[in-house]
Length: 175
Image (cartoon, rainbow, N blue to C red):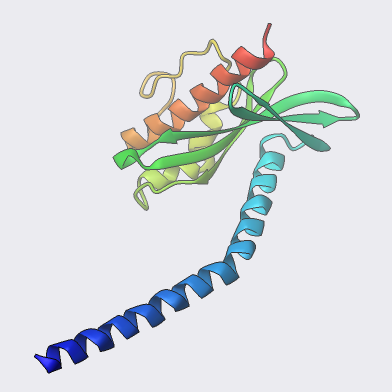
C-alpha cells in the first residue's frame, strides 16, 4: 500500500513540473505569437487591397471593418470573416471589397481543412473566382464557384465566408 502512495506522489510531482513548464512556455511565447498574428493580419489587409495607404478599423453591429484609404479617399473595405469548413472547423479569412461592393481579393488567414484537399481553398486559382463578385451575385458552389475537387464542404465554407463579408458590406456601406 505504501508503494502505491509513493508512486502516486511521484506521478503528482511529475505532473506539477510538466504543468508548470507548459505554463512558463506559454507565458513566454504568447507575446511573440500575438505580435506575429497582428503582422499576418496586417499583411492580409494589404494583400486584399494593395493600393491602400492606410486602414482604419470601424465596428458596426459587432462586426469589424477596415476602411482602406489612399490620398485621403476611401477606396475599399477589408472585412474579416469566419465560416465553418469541414468538420465545422473555422475558416478565417479577410475579404477586400471596393467601394462599389465588388470583391477585390480574398486571403485565408487560418483553417483546419484536410491537407492536400480542403487546404486548396488558400490557392490563388480557387480564390480568384470571387474577384468581381458583388453582394447581389449568386454565390453557389458547383454553379457560380468551382469547388475544389474532393473538398466541396471546404469550398462551401469559404464561399459562405465571402458571402457573409459581402452581405456585411452591403448592410453597412450601401445606402
